Image 1 (tube, rainbow, N blue to C red):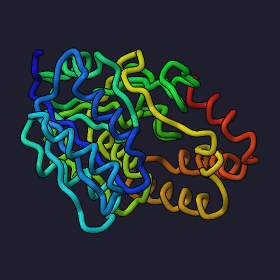
Image 2 (tube, rainbow, N blue to C red):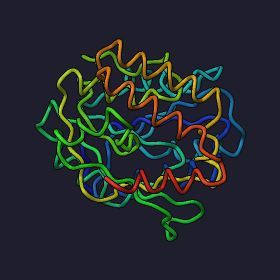
Image 3 (cartoon, rainbow, N blue to C red):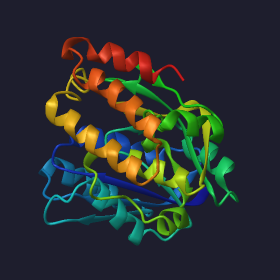
Length: 273
């Protein structure tokens, strides 16, 4: 099997399930081309079932893992994984998602030699089985269209990205102060710093969801965090004053939308480019 010089960075924590982790890790080495390095950060204590999966997988020659004593959050773990990575090119992955068989091959062929490019793809959402796709998250193909849309909502499927590690280093890595919005902030910052984006127009990752995922993204606390994040983006000049007002109006409605219908609204927005 052909190996490519790519480091996959991934993190798991106590809230993940052992089966999900196994399916995710297995998909990384069941590829048409294999990444030469997989780096897993264990974010604090985990159950014995997950640890057994990890110990079994460590016999794969391209796999290394590091465990933190306490939970530090995803942004911290990804920055740490970057320091341990040894390849020029890095791919992101989430520990409960599953790669398509040809993900790495397609992304690597598009990315190699383009050192100022972030390559991503669509993703396919599922709940219990990848044979039952519930939605596709689509992203425009070209940089100019991505730039227009991302100032209103995060249209990048972060678990699908592949890029040169130097882009992370030059631009400061993940921001550990923005909570669960670290991926969105990263993309806004990279685009603001003239990094280019390209999206492959097909899904290359299966992303696991659940019925309550969208309903959890609501309420006053979530809305206040949204306001703070959008204002920070305005101060950093990632978005304009016009974008700030537009997003405040949109997300006030979205976050306070009735929970039982919210998944339908999200699904419509996310599957229409």
